[in-house]
Length: 296
Image 1 (spheres, helix red, strand yellow):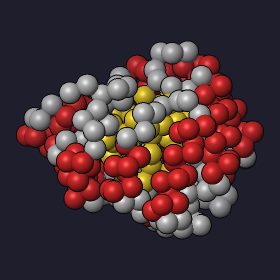
Image 2 (cartoon, one colour):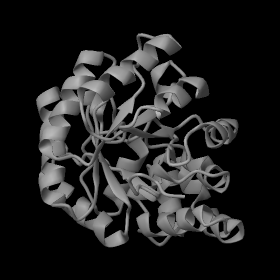
Image 3 (cartoon, helix red, strand yellow):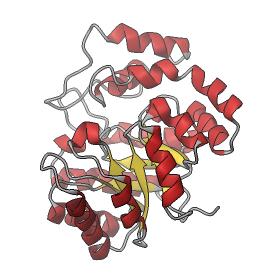
Image 4 (tube, helix red, strand yellow):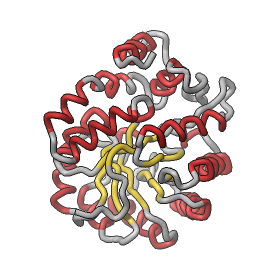
């Protein structure tokens, strides 16, 4: 089977590193980009949920995407997070990301305003018609208060520049239906680290991962084993990451993963309100996972 664009395997939902005052730390961003290139990560997702898209302004959002694209310099694909709950804003962000040279865009379902399934279809259809760039749908009902149905996804999969979906429902019945109903070359990515191995063994092609921020090489090994159908190897390799998959969500993402990377010496503690640093009660939990993996 040929996937239109190879985002197979582990794609990182990259954090946006910040100084303690919340300003973006671009030097550290460079270091993180190099880290993922050296680790064999399949692509970088810039300014998605984990990159704090909800707390950066439009100009800053595009500045981070631009910096990531320029520094990556085609050494690794860059997928720009350009979703919005306003269709016109999503079109604007997606067009700008194309102008900046992004390889693809990741578009979350419109949050807060609770569109119908037909509204979701028309939203994504219009963005795809207006901006000629590869687009990946993103369904994360736990964040958005709207759940895009398999039927809507299948309808959208017939649009040529909508090349795939990131499904973060954690519901394995969804991947079974998507595999059965979507075109063979439609990219199926998981957005749920805890169920990723099962998702991939059922026919998924990869994932956009929070855990990949912390342990990209190990996760790529897990994903590629699962994609190749080696269930035993994938599950064995994933076992040592299972606590990390869970505990990187003890508070809202990206609070725990930013704390983990800070403890690993890879970034400052900076995060933006209304998010705060990881609560003291959970710090030992995350730090114990890092110690068990010999990361601190």
